[in-house]
Length: 622
Image (cartoon, rainbow, N blue to C red; front, side, top):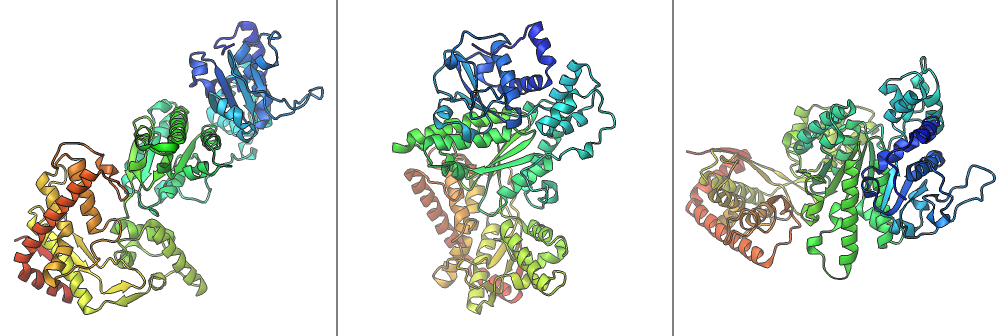
């Protein structure tokens, strides 16, 4: 017994005169058309999750879909094509809740349930496909009214009706005329994203993702107008970046920007479902995807995506578990992105730990790294969280000193400042923000001198590189109490030939990054911790570039390609030979940097002394 793609005239006449059955037949065909059971009549078990109010209409429609509307009295209970799980029949003469046995069919069989939680684990594992059946759409309602011969309605009215409970949808679908219907009296559709949360266009920051967002916004608008099919819309994106850079906020704001629901979950939540066994994990994962695809537009946000695993690194006892999890995730992602109105956003701090198949074209194909915000962005973000009560220009006085602040840090700062203003019953001022900052203490003069030497070392190596002409240097006079790693100085310059840097250019960059700590050793005979300690530090950047140089760009001892340049982040675990070669590159360039700065020691000390006095310096290439 397989899906009947065509119905004979008598059966179709019966279906079209029964609007609930027709509407659910449309919904079933729409949801199942991507499955192998529908496309190629493959044998298998299909579990369908249906809204409780529609489930009995879905059973009637499923019987038509599976039997062509013909009587199948020859089949015993174990061979019936459609079963309902956990629901009492509406008719009083019913025998009650069905007790469904799990078996491997010689044909196709559909199980209907109002919740995946109500489907026993054995059946979830046995199912060839688990599909969320969305309620009938606006187009289904328009088609039903045409077949009934009642008055035509426009798409916007049909869409408003489609968002209603089943009883209202059925009643309005058969009503002869809907002229004069007050749409405002209909129930508002429920959404998962907070109605008070902002849309992406209202938020500052997220610069690297803006172009993609603008493109998808246009595509979704065209899709809604039937200008393009859903397959022409970009639907999968991976966000990477350190904690606090706004990955979760991005997904929420994207959903609001598009007018979609947000379905938010994480791999950790799936792993923690019930007892965390493989079946529990797969069921929880399937439920999240089914929830997203059941909506008329949803952003499925999956956090901690690196925990899904990577088949290239699977070893030992966990290989079977991880292999099944990755395989199921790939299947669900592919299916979800084919469903009109479903967008999948993944987030991770460790992009290189994700299986390549997850990141390929057609799945999470767009990869965006959310950096710490730039100077202007920091002020814009803080101004936004202060409800724009202080201008961006005025806030630069504060935010230009917070180079290591994440968007989350800036939001916390705004909350503290607003709290202080409320206590004093006035508007937020710059003094409230200053008071909310961590306590600062003056730096000793010898520490200021070391910082100035450090920054001038960077600057001189930038001039020496031959690719930077103007360098701006600023240093701080205070340190944050309790912070081990301080951001004591800032160096700004722009290198030429950023488009296609050569081997010489990249090595020059490494020397610039090492110039600060090398200058300290040249002048003081020892080094401080100022070159390392945090992601984005001098040593972090130099180390990553050395790994890219040898392991990704093919500029090292061999032409072997180890890993993509973008996948070399703070948690990258290199092979032993790659680590040795990166160490050798860093050691060689550090020796060269010290040698250059030793020859320029007098000039180095002269510029450092000027910087101690003025706290800022502009150096131009002669």
